[in-house]
Length: 435
Image 1 (cartoon, rainbow, N blue to C red):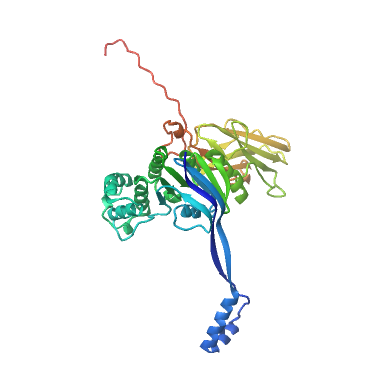
Image 2 (image 1 turned 60 degrees about the horizontal axis):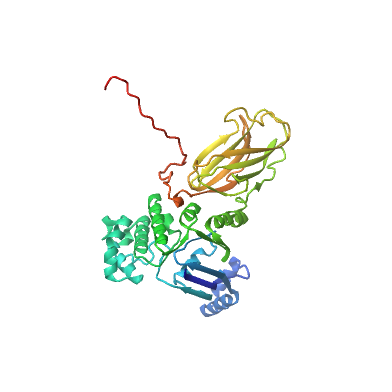
C-alpha cells in the first residue's frame, strides 16, 4: 500500500510582536509631553517603540513526522492550541512549513472553516462551480455531480441566493457537500462539522466513512471522541505542537484523556484524589476512580460494556443521616442519571463507625449513548444536604462500537440515554369462537 502523505521533521513557526512600556507615565508626564513640538514628540515615540518592541518565535508545529497510507481514516486529536489546525493548513498547502519536508500524492479537498473557498457575493450554485474548479474539477464533472451535491446539502430552496445570506449551518452543509462529492483522493475535515445539527453530522460521518471504504484518505479533527472512534481506525494526538501519540484510535483516545487532559486540568486523571474540604467536616470524599469490566482504570468505555465508579470516603464522626450519591451529566449540563446509596434500602454508611470506606457503584452497559459525560460524586447528610461534592470530577467517554460492526444504532434519536430494553412477541391463542 502506498503512502499518500509523508511528513518529515515538519515545523511551522510564527513571529509574534510584543510592545513593552518600560516605565509608567503619570498624568503630568503626558501633559508635559503634549507641550513639546510635534516633531520632537514623534521622534520620541518612534525611539520608544524601537527600544521596546520585541519579537518572539512561536512554533505552532515542531519536529512532526507522519506517514499515512492510501485509504486510511485518521483522527487528529488534542487540546485547543495543540497545533491541529496548523497541521491541517500545512497539509492543505494553505501555508508552507517553516522546516522539514512534506510530500502529498493526490488531490486534496479541505474543509477547515465554514465556507472554505466560497465567495460570499456568489450564489450557492455559482460557488459549487467555483469550489469545484479550485479543486481541479472540470465543468462537465461538476455538472455530473451537481444534483448529488445539492440533495446532500439540503439547500436547494436557497441555491440561487448569495451565500452571504446563508446561516452558518447552511454554509457548512453546502461546503462539506462540495468537498465530499467531488471525490478527492484526500479529504481533510476540521472541527467545522460541529456547526451542523446532529442529523447532518451523522450524514457527514457516513459520507466520510464511505470515502475511506472507497480507498480515499480521510483526516478528521474533532473534540467529539465518539465521532472519532466511529469514523477512524488510527489516531494521532498532538500536544504543544508535537506528536504525543500515534496508533490505534482507541489507544489514542485513552492517551489523550489520561495523559493530555489529565495533565491540563487535573480533573480527568484516573483516579482523582481530593483534599479534606474543611477542618470540621464529619465525612468527606478521599478519591474517585472509574474502572472498566476488566478492572483496569479507564476514562473511556465501549457503549456495550458496563463500568464501575469507586468512591473512597472517610468518616470522622458517626451519624445515622449520611448518604452518598453519584450524578452523571452531559456536556450541556443535562443530568443523565442520579443514583444514591439509599435507592433500595437505608444508606450503608448511615450508622458506620469512623474509618475509611470504599463504595463500588456499578453502571450497566448499553445505558449511556456514545458521547462525553461528567461524573460528580457526593457525600451528604439528610435534611442538611451535601457535605462534600466534587463537580465533574471525572470525564467519561462512551465510545461507539456498534456501528463499526455494522449493527443498527440504538441511539439515533435525541434521547438522553440508550438502554437496550427487552422485547418479546407472543401470538394470541384462538378463543375457539371461530371469530
